[in-house]
Length: 202
Image (cartoon, rainbow, N blue to C red; front, top):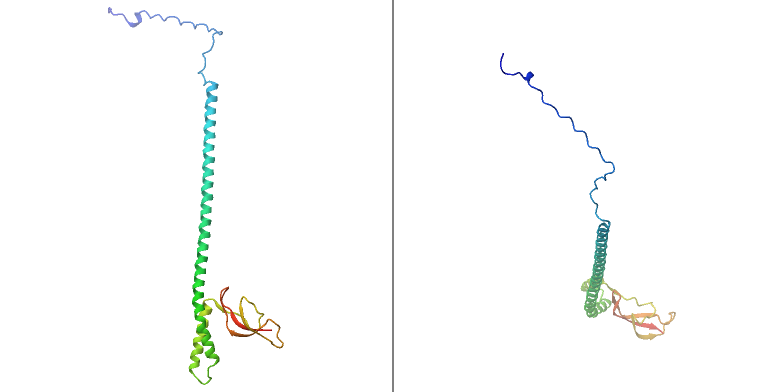
């Protein structure tokens, strides 16, 4: 037989007995959980956050106040500019009316001459039609500029529009009534360029 021993002939290794669990002491305290932040620290953080919110609210109120002031100032400036523009337009229009009125006023004697020429024109002269045409064109030009003739004959005498040359007895006419026009009066808008020269019933 071989001198080598088979695995079966080798002694088996001894397995040590399992260690019995150590007894648990129920009276031993459990491990303390991880510590939370202290209450006073939380209160400090809350107070800081509230102070920050209050500061932001104050900044917002100030920004809103300034925005309201800027808006109010802008609106006042816009209103002032609009008033200035309207006043400037009104002054420009008034300046134009005054200048136009002065030019028209200086031309009225020419219109008077044309009226007298037409009143005394001989019927058989053809050139008188040309004078009539010039007169009508002149009147149309003045009307286009806003010049109107003052109503006088048959109207109650008004010193704002009429200039009395004489007072005459007139049968069947109420006293103070204009009975004749010696020279026509004219207005430019509401401005009297020249009062009508009239005769008034006594």
